[in-house]
Amino acid sequence: MNLSEIDRQLILATQSGLPLTKEPYQQIANELGMTAKEVISRLDKMLKSGIIRRIAAVPNHYALDFKANAMTVWDVPDECVVQLGEKLGQQVAVSHCYQRPRALPDWPYNLFAMVHGKSREEVGKKIESIKSLLGTQVRQCDVLYSQKILKKTGLRIKDTSKDV
Image 1: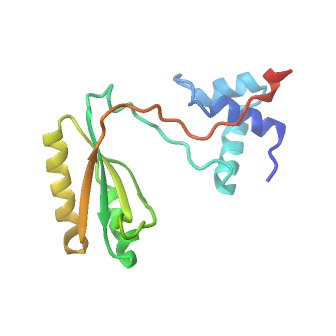
Image 2: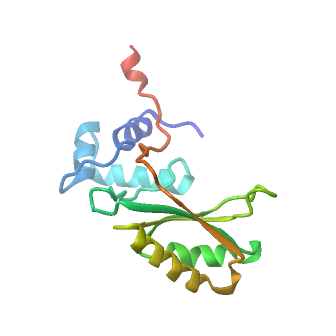
């Protein structure tokens, strides 16, 4: 699907995050010469069409003192992965949860979830709670603790107006 020039400008204006103001859509609208209602409508249309995947708050866990983070990986039956993933993704300590294909024989895991806490001990307790929640469907799991902070950004489109 081709983007209109205004939708391209809207993506460029929002791809690094919304402005931290009381009325972020109005600020974007002012910058692009449109109304806040039009900004919201265009973003909604792009969400529904799949051009953009989501608009969500992304907290800085480190700034909130959640310095122990672990990617948990779970081997669960494929026929249960969606149901168990929904349970897992609803946990307060989980920032994101998703299904991935297995890479047998070395990697049997098909369900992934990032768990956050203020200490490794706290994260460990949360993971034990998650194991109980998921129950006997869990065949095995592993925990991969974060060792350093990586810059997290999604796909970006290039601002070609600056190439002129």
